[in-house]
Structure formats: C-alpha cells, structure tokens
Length: 193
Image (cartoon, rainbow, N blue to C red):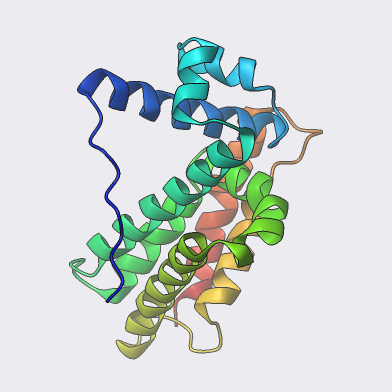
C-alpha cells in the first residue's frame, strides 16, 4: 500500500505569507506572464525575497502551486454547485466563476506552462481531470433537466469561456473585463434550450 507523506503544518504567519505569495504570483502571472521576476512577486506579496524562496525554492515550484491552487478553487466551487437548486444554476455560476476578473487571464497565461509540465506531474493531471469532470457533470445535469442545449459539451463551453475571457492587450484592463462579462452573459443566454 502506497503512503503519502503529509506536509508539515505551517505556523499561522507562515501560512498567511504562503497564501499572499501564491495570490501575488497569480496576479502578476495574469498581468505579465510566468516569466515575471521573483523579486516582483515578493514585492507584490509584501514579503521579502528570502521568505519567498523559503516557501518556493524556484520559479517552477511557485508556478506549479499557482496552477494547482487555480484548479483547487474551481473544484471546490464546482463541488459546491452540486447543491445548487438546479443544474442550470450550477452551470451559470461556474461560467461566471470562470469569468472572474483575473482568472481568465491567469488560465491563459498558464496554458503554455501547463502544456509543457502537466503530463509529468500526477497531481496537476489529477486536478485538471477532476476540474473537467466536475464541469462536465454540471453541464450534463443542466442538459438532463432540459434547461441547456444538448449540442454542447463541457469542453466546448470551457473553450468558449477561454476565448471570451482572453485579454486583448490593445484594450485597457477595465474594457477587457467589461467586454468579457458582457460576452459571458451572451454565452449563457445562448446555452438555454
């Protein structure tokens, strides 16, 4: 039987620093891509560079954790949606979650990194599959209740969301977010039966 070693529990202040580093890295990766300098991430997180490197010894480990956390958030939200009043409500909430400011940009910025590293990382593969499975389940539930078109899959919908939330560098960030929100609502309207 295979056992997994548990990570040591962090002190409260160390856990807060770790969370701030992941959040700051996510913001900067969304804005500038995965090659953003580690010093800039430390500054955004409000921690020293030494603190950043104690938590994440290299860029790979930090980007990996940002990606894993993005999937964990989606999985947690998708799991919570199974208690939604209807499958349609779950799909709408998940689409709006995917359109949250910064999340679409983060997903787009991480896409090439994930394409290169996910296959060699069992946890990231598992998180990705878990997220996709839960999203597909929500779509099937909405379709089974007759509220959603049956000619679209969860994968189709995720691609549409991705296209809609991709940042257009020629537009200011606020204009991108306003357009994305509007387009997501158009998509939602178009998904109904």
